[in-house]
Image 1 (cartoon, rainbow, N blue to C red):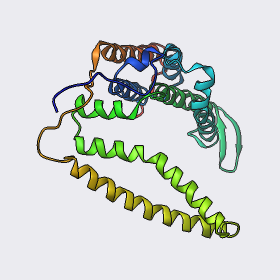
Image 2: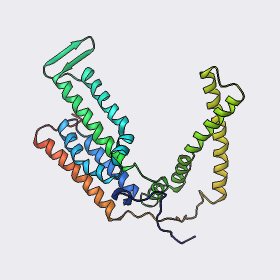
Image 3: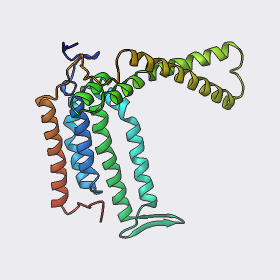
Image 4: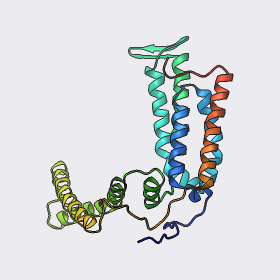
Length: 264
């Protein structure tokens, strides 16, 4: 097979981000995270968070879709900040102290930096991968990043089977309920269903592995791809924009004297 089909996903392209190669989005998220984790100051994280607003607007999620996907981050970030405020490294004037709890000006500043940094790192990652098709990502990882196709395709097959596991769990639950053994002993019932699901998963995995081997997966001959994955100019543009965001955030933090390198 040597013909190459045009890239296609099951999703209708409605935003500029969806036209960018998933590998470019992955690298952009990693690049921004690498820049932001170098310091623990509120200035660089706050500047980066403001500059990431256009990225959210480009995603095409809409506010309802955005909140539906990011609400765990909005809960986790304040909780992390609260922990740092109560038990973080003290500095400056101590505002409150009781037992192991010590709230100071330094711990509050560190808490604010922690909240902003969690948001600035997590939100772009969620937005960039909100509508990524797993098959397109696998094509990009194997063709652009040159990762081993055996590993990529195996991971893709496993990801595709997650929905099947959910259906199997539901079928097991209904079958046990029909037999009248699902009304008592929740812990025992959960353990039994988990073991049954494990057995089903092993059997299905063995069958899938045999089928993939029969179709030539894992062979020594160079494989061909049904869909070509192209990085494209828009992918490079996203990386440059991400680098600019990180550079501006670092520059503002350094100029204001807020930059605090993690390793000192």
